[in-house]
Image 1 (cartoon, rainbow, N blue to C red):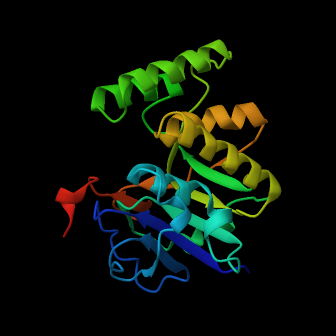
Image 2: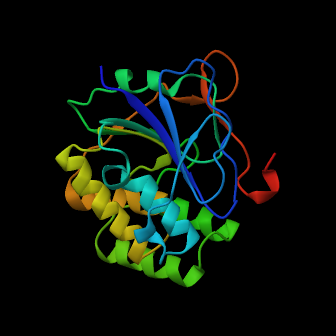
Amino acid sequence: MDKVVCYTCVTGGYEVPPPPPAGSAADFLCFTDGPAPEGWTALPVPEELSGLDQVRRQRAVKICAHRYLPSDYLVSVWSDGNVAWLKDPAGLPPMCDFTVSPLYVRVHPARRCVYEEAEAVRRMGKEDPAVLARVLARYRDGGFPENAGLAETNILVRRHFDPSCRRFCDRWASEVMLWSKRDQLSFPYAARELGFVYGTMPWLYRGDGSSGWFGTLPHGRARRG
């Protein structure tokens, strides 16, 4: 069985990933410009990303596992820096059928499409409204439908060197670099444009109790420690 790596990226002291669960069979890597978080092995943020803003540096590492992870890892689990694992993430890849898709995500629990996501992003002030307007106009002009599904991309399970996964992630990253930095907006758009079929993980529950795989902490510097 391939060794599983769980990885994340935090820059600028924005947040500190919670410690991994005890006894995990995964390796835990954190790309960071700061000290290694407890239980994680620190790797430097790639120098080639230094010209990007802080958010897009993180997004590049998140999306392009095939570019930045050590080549001896064939299976990866990405988790955002605020994800607190309640179960061992090494248990997720064996539950994914990689003959169906090389990439698995969780269906968004609250919103159904990119247009609802864009409204939520606007309401929370997480993107320039002018950028959102340009992105949505492009999607509508291209015939992207409403209610076409939405992924929650805080956790990604991948065979990241799979050729179709690499093509998709390169296209997804291009959308984030050129348009909105909100990666959940462009994930379904990039998939549709390429005809890429991604898998979903209905068993990946958030919350406490025996069914919960993970919890989430509030994002941001103020939640450190």
